[in-house]
Image (cartoon, rainbow, N blue to C red; front, side, top):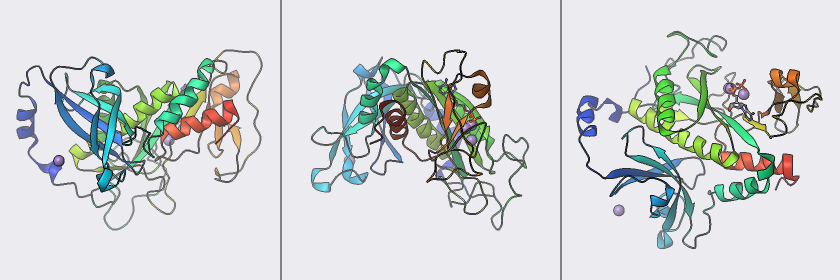
Length: 338
Ligand code: ADP
Ligand code: MN
Ligand code: MN
Ligand code: MN
Ligand code: MN
C-alpha cells in the first residue's frame, strides 16, 4: 500500500462537526493564484461580511511574494487581483473560491502571470469565435512519490487493461476521480468527462469546450480542486509529463480547437493531412485523421463529416493553458508564434 499523509488520517467525523457549524452572514473566500514556478498553486482564505455576488464584490488582496518564488524579501508584497469566482465545494455555499491574477508592486503582471497576454490575443481573434477543450491527464502518487497503489518493490502488470478499465485490479484510486468530478461541477467548472488512462493510477478529465481564457481559467481551478481533493485523501496528484521512466505512458494535456467556421456543416473538406511516423516527435510536425501518434489528430468523426475541431496532442500535462491557447491562436490565426 502507498503511504498516505498523516493529516488525511485525522478524525473526519470530528472535522465534519466544525464544518457544519452555522457561520452567520459572513462568507469565507479562498484566493487562489499561480506561484513563481508557473506550475503550482497557492491559496489563502479571508472572511467577507456577506456573500459576494460577483467579481466586483471581491477586494484586491496581497501576499508575500518572497515566499512563493515571486519577489525579493525587501520588496515582497504582490497584488492579488480576483478574476474569476467559483462556489467552494469544500466549505460549501455561501463560501467561494477565487482565481486571481498576480501583479508586481508596480502593477505589471508577475513573470508567471501569462493570463494578461492570453486575454489580449483572444480579444484579437474575437470574431473567429475560437473554442478550446483541454484534456488534463495526471498521475496519483503516494506521499512518498511512489505511484499510488503500485507494489512497493516492483511494478504492476504491463499496460493494456487499464485505459478506461474497471475493477480493483485495473482502476487505481477512482474515489479521487469521482470526488474531483463532483467538486468541479459544484464549483461551476465545465468538466465534460473523465476516464482512466493507459498507465495504472493515471487518469484524465476534460474541460470545455469554450473560449480560450474561460477554459484556461477553469482548468487552473480544476487543478486546484484536484490537489485539494487529493489532500483530503492523503495522496498527491502529479502533472509530471513523464512520471515513470521506461515503457510507461506519459501524461499530456491535449488541446482541441475549433472556430465558428470549422464548426459549420459544409460540403467541402477543410482537413489536409499527410502520412506520419509512429510516435509524435518533438522536432517534427505531423497530422492525421484518427492518428494518435501525430502532433495533430483530426478525430475520425470530424474527418468523415468534414467539419468540427482538431486536437493538438503536443502540450504536456504541466503546461500553462494560458500559454498553450495563446500560442495556438498566434500560430493558427495570427501567423506570429512569438
Ligand atoms: P480523446 O478521444 O482525444 O480522448 P476526449 O473525449 O478526451 O477525446 O476529449 C475531447 C475534448 O474535445 C474535450 O475537451 C471537449 O471539450 C473538446 N471539444 C469537443 N468539441 C469541441 C469543439 N467544437 N471545439 C473545441 N473543443 C471541442
Ligand atoms: Mn503573517
Ligand atoms: Mn481524452
Ligand atoms: Mn488521454
Ligand atoms: Mn485526446
